[in-house]
Length: 181
Ligand SMILES: Cc1cc2nc3c(=O)[nH]c(=O)nc-3n(C[C@H](O)[C@H](O)[C@H](O)COP(=O)(O)O)c2cc1C
Image (cartoon, rainbow, N blue to C red; front, side):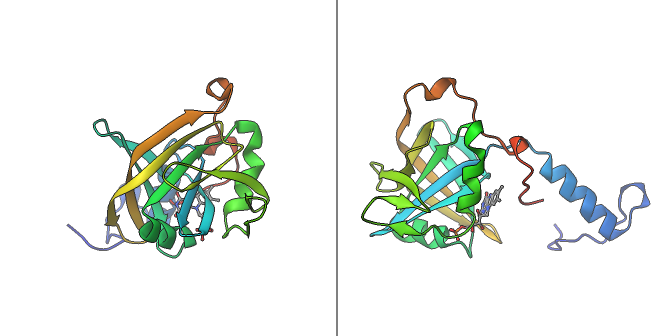
């Protein structure tokens, strides 16, 4: 198997390498995805981060995986704290994800991150109060996959906000944002 990120070709339709890279990115962007807020904590340090690479990965036990950049503050918190939460966001709250593309300022007194109220889940990870549903996880596996680490967590607690099950869930396609590719 090649270890090159950019293969040598030949590429489909006689494309050059730059055109092929653009095509590959566009296909990757078309993978259907949700858009979530990932909570992490180590000691008294907490963070919330915008994330679209999340999925269920096993039935028994119930486990979900998230893929997090090595350079993210969240990465260090998950490794150190051994827990994370995945919050489902209402489609109409799409603007909130913009708050969590950089480390969130923590107000310990009033329990807010970037001005958004949170509570601590059973794992210890923060869960934003605006979540319409959440998965609260204990870290079980970490796999270095290159730019990112894949963290697999067992679901320790899950729930909906009142009425949350009937609220449309935010997905990547509801925004003009893209990630990865
Ligand atoms: C739409 C969108 C989706 C994102 N998805 C991910 C993701 O799945 N994994 C990831 O590591 N970063 C993702 N990011 C980037 C992080 O939100 C961003 O790098 C953040 O600053 C890192 O978090 P932290 O340093 O506060 O922990 C995404 C950003 C946007 C705008």
